[in-house]
Image 1 (cartoon, one colour):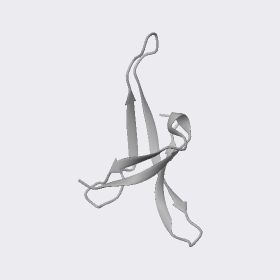
Image 2: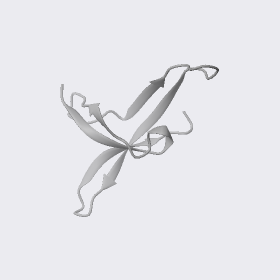
Image 3: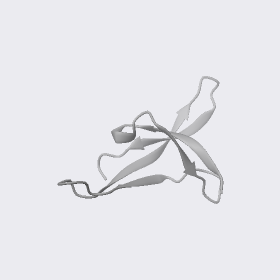
Image 4: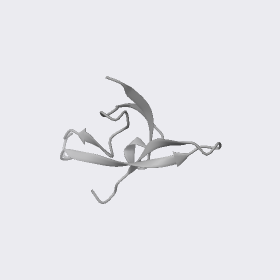
Length: 71
C-alpha cells in the first residue's frame, strides 16, 4: 500500500510529519483518528484530525491534518 508523508498541526502531534496510508483514490483520508491507550489514571482517548489544504509558494497545494478540538 502507498503512503504519503503528511504534516499535523495543533494538538499533541503538532509539527510532526507522519506517513499516512492513501485511500483508493490515492488521497489521504478526510478524518484521521489516533487512539491513545489508558495510562495510569488517564482514560483511553481518541485524537481526531481533519484534512485541510495547505498552499505552497508556487500555488500548489498539499494535504495536512488539523487538530479537531470538538470531537
